[in-house]
Image (tube, rainbow, N blue to C red; front, side, top):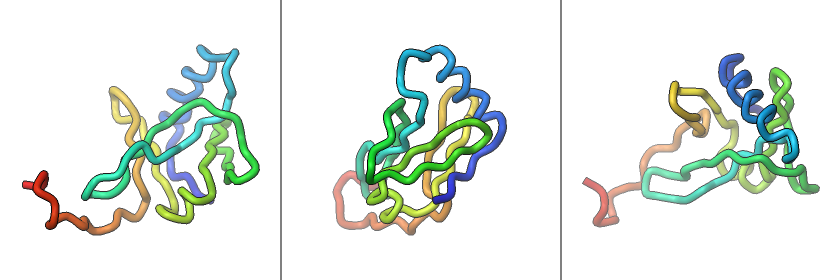
Length: 103
């Protein structure tokens, strides 16, 4: 597994982990929903399960369910000033065109 991130992002996540010391200290990346432009992701504190991949980056243990990783591949997590951007490293072309909610 590969998580693309940077030191600033890991520091911000470390602040969250410190404030939530009574919670699991792993950052789960999960698919929060699907749209015509692909999946949207969420981050949460969670335990590691048997079907998870893990990667330790700058002191942060990222967790992704194997089926999610198999679907989207490598994931980029970045602090963007007021929250986190989570997206696949390789963004797939939009499948939009058939739904009425697009443009």
